[in-house]
Image: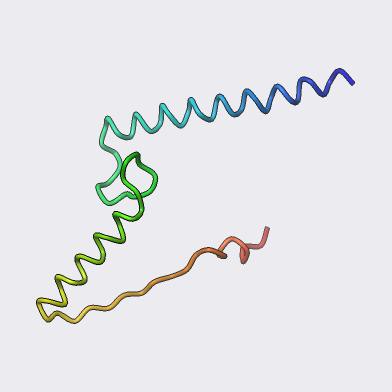
Length: 85
């Protein structure tokens, strides 16, 4: 089976191409400021914990101002299990 080596090389090339594309796309989005300031998790050094901290601070600020607040939170963990493939 000499053809199986070609398929295994494709997997390596796809990983290298994916890393190169991710690096270039991230750099382009960062240098041209195309991502919003509230984009968390997909940018370097801006973890999703910052989003939770920002939300908590805002809620406490509004509570201290005696403002009525409400929130709707959705758990999207299994949303793709419901999609008909």
